[in-house]
Amino acid sequence: MEKFIPSCEQLEFALAEQHKTAGMVCDFDSCTRETLRFAYSAVTPQTHTEAAFVAWSAGIDEGRKIMIEEYCRRRRSESALLFDHPILEMKHIPLPYTQRLLVFREQIDVLASELTGTSPRDSIAFQIYRAGIDDISTRIIGRGDFRDMVTEEYRHALTDNDIDQLYDLIQTNYRVSLPYWYCSGIVERALKL
Image (cartoon, rainbow, N blue to C red; front, side, top):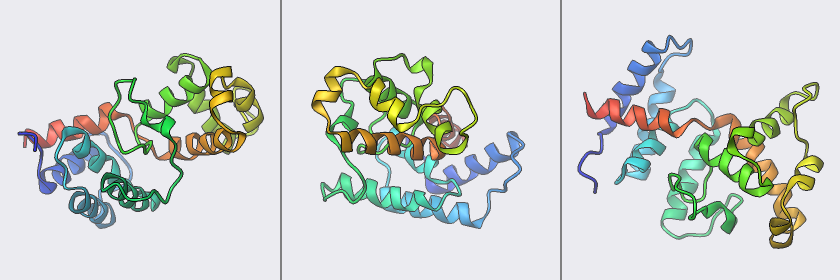
């Protein structure tokens, strides 16, 4: 275990303080605390990245409990219930490792960029996300556009179904993702308490 992993109570306090400091309209309520406690108990963070994952999990989205359970299942090397593909390892890219689950915004941006051969600054992932909520925007990327953008290398390595599932994964997870720097900052703040 890393020397400096915050307790669940420290994370709770840091998240509550972050909500106040940021002037967030939503309250750090009992539902959010319950999800955080569930995540902390299930994950039992041993690393900074795992503590950041727990901080991410404190959101109000119902799907986060499913992601927490999947994270633990994959960490125990059990069969995945959610979509999984070796490309999600992204071992050659220095990103936080979350058991091939895309929870941090940087992971999603890099995956979309990797598949399409573009720069993460092009925000391909955001454009895919927007395709799911806004058909009026001119800078959206639909499923067909995404298939066309996938590099030759990945078109040969992935099936059409894989590409479609990765598109759906990017679109769905972008909405619930948070930047790693934000979640990591919560962990750092918790350690100072």
